[in-house]
Length: 505
Image 1: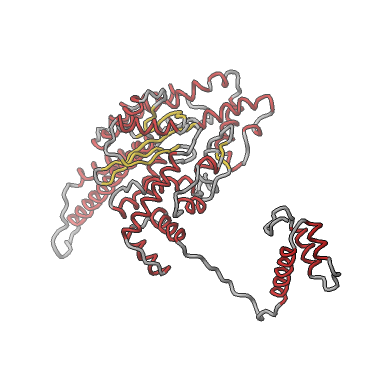
Image 2: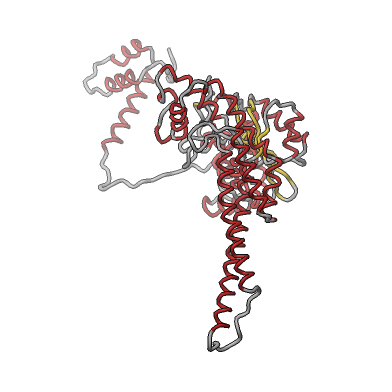
């Protein structure tokens, strides 16, 4: 006779057995007959009868009048406490003592700081194991940068399209050997580097050469624009000061020319009116020239020119050199601090435009300018139009559209995403007064799994934008990481990468 815990009986069969057992007119010997027919014990049949009867009575008993109150209950067990510690330490940027207070005041759970610290280290070790076991067979436009807390550097490596954090590690040094090891570790996870953009740090450049990565190094345009903003701010402040001094000099001269002088001491000025007006004119001229020429330089570095076509590297070089000559002719020390480094990095800044021009040279032969403008316009407005490359042109020209879009998706020259990630990391360093090694894997896991709430990546996580499917939820990952016993999760058992990965354009 089969045991009572049967898995081969379907729900409909069990319902049939319950209805026949509850039939008040059932005949003598029917229970034995059902037992032989279904291959179950009589005890099992009577157990089904008792369960069905209890369920019916429970469903039909009188209920209280009115709308039922919403009651949500949680089971505060050891795994729940560990999960709360992981979330509070990694998501809300808390330190050990505030986490201890939250557990005590909110949940009524008392844990020592030593207990919380040890659990955080265990969860961080589990997150590190999960991150290291993650297979990432994708091509990335890497952005490398360094953030410091005190004298300790944290080496950051992110993907410039999906915003996926590839590496986040606190190191003792930031030399070529350290950066080389970081790049090799990321490569061992299956990552293929298309290029690396950085702010010009010597350790990053030496690390790329140390591991013999045959990829282009892109200078960071973000830092260039940030420095240009500082120069513009200084010139603007100088212009306002010159306007104020000139206006004060005019008022002082008007007082002197009045037949009756006002009471009190005469208005003091630092410069005579002709000299103040000369400085005012010069400051305004420098500011206007700076704003105009900076716009020309910025436009010349764009992959698409003002005519809506692929930019010419030769024309861009001539435009930038002419603008720099005019800026140098202003003989302004503040502007000179910006122009000198720009002249030295001009070849590197123009390298992405030269690459794009060469990559599309064959596709542009015989292509009508209007068609090229249409392809580029569609690429610039693809999100608003919600279109794919195949929808831009008829079937014979679809390959051309795909070639243009693929080349533009590889146009990369900024490490601004790494800088944005550092703004998110900074509060954690300040709270913990350092970079605990257990915290970094947790932060990397949280960032790669969290879903963007706004912006062009809205609605998906970095891993999803990188082309991964069947992702586990962040909640389920925290459940596994905070397990009392050793986590049993294996990264690649949770999700799969598409065979043809399409990164974020």
